[in-house]
Length: 484
Image (cartoon, rainbow, N blue to C red; front, top):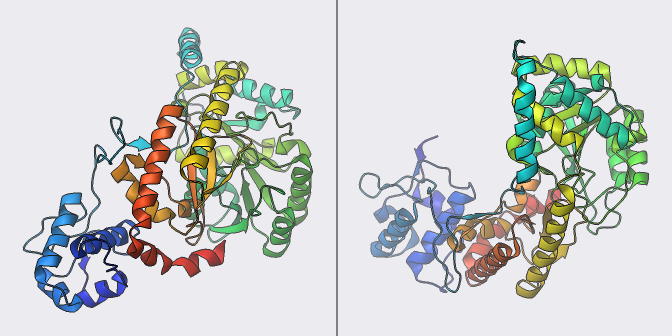
């Protein structure tokens, strides 16, 4: 929404911004940029005139003019009429060069934790799918449940993993996010509570809020053992009676932890006693780097809804996922799904059936590569950012780092200047929590991970030399820490 910001309100937001470590115009521009990126100054808001802000701050107009010019140059302020530019976000196509760093083409994106396609395997699956397509062409092409060959392949995979499953217990979806949206619309009404681990997968939080539900966070323990606070989860289910719980027990995103079978059994029993439906995201289960042996959550009770996909193990471009549940629930999910769409693309499902049938084929090479990447990243972080506390993941795609101060958002804002895009810690939590944390994927090869860690070190050094940025973030620290 457009509007304007008066000088008194802006000065209150700025706080103690002038540390003297940089020219005053640079410090003023840096703090305004942080406030825009952090959402405390909305977009499309007119800043005070140069004259009015200079008078309120007790500065020369030249200083404010230079600060506004710096913001315009960086793309955070429109040219506007006169000096009343409006706040905006830059559309950067290439990173600025940082001293001592060789920036690769484009911005290195660590906001996503995804792998490129398992090329040869995926290509072959699509080639095979095209040979099977003619048999389906006489039909209408709409199938809200999913192509039978893919449902059978997914059911067989669960059965092989120790969970007997019929094709009627499978609904094919357009990815795991689509599956979660179907489940939310079916099982949870507006204002219902949904229990989540804290931290958790950001897109799941977005889906829960978009459905009109309230996330009910239960904190993971500070150390890796025990990996989950099952007592707290059971107490929350019994006292708060959430409609459902969304969990990532297999190489949890973002921490990489895995839930033990004993913990799974307790949680399934408690959910049944409290009437909470357990919705389990298994998209990372195949990325088992340390060979940890666990049973799928659905092995411990029938009232578990499992969500899976090929996005993390094979390729996100397939946009193929699924829901496993009892057949009565599947019927309800199908009814919900038909309001959203009438079915997924057929060729992709035929290819996905081939990939599920030979699920492990590309994984040996993928897991070996990921182990190498993980060790490289852990070594680089220890060498260049020794003050960061790193939790070693058992599998999955990411490392969850505890920072020495609550500066995750500030690092994320500074990182593009060093050629890096990140997801700030608070994206993984509720109420502004996790400013002390940053998720770093190890999906890139070691040479790019080295660039990324050096870029992080550069952003950290810049932040350490700019105390006003730290003070600005500390103004919101109590609210963030109260939720953790």
